[in-house]
Length: 250
Image (cartoon, rainbow, N blue to C red; front, side, top):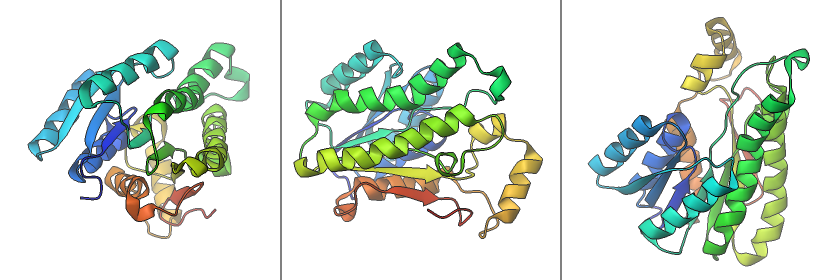
């Protein structure tokens, strides 16, 4: 159990990749705070799955795109598991819609950037005082942050590229304090994200172009996150790690 007796916080931890991460960290021994915004049913299902495997977790509703929500998440984390956080996974994010440059407006810009980038920045800022030597931060970036993303995903791709950059910077800033910061960059992963926003024929084409000839699974991303969060990755920081079946290389 790589994370025995450690406390982990997973933003957007109720469904898809977030759920897989929450479940995996709990299986590795962590006490997990499963954050969600509107996915209450999915969050409760995630908690049940963790508890059925003998793990310990709590679900916390909080909108991490707002400072008030972040403050509430910190307070409830401390109430549940004390004043120490060993693992922070900044997973909350979304594409929300595909929009061309002509279709963009300020409200949509704020929606995407507030969740994907602002949330990552200020959640990390808020939890940093609870983290000490040996702690680990894992950010959720994307292959889109490297290659610009598909049609209509410019703001999503830009936000994930920014997450990759702040990962490198924070590795330098927090490294002397013994805190590691990495990000994972998933490619085509079989989740509701692509069910909602990617056409079946596009998914089939991408899978066919991937050297492993398939989409990835959320559990495979979770395995990578758990490794980066653990002491087994104790000399790895500042990396944006690709997980895309060989479709793109850094």
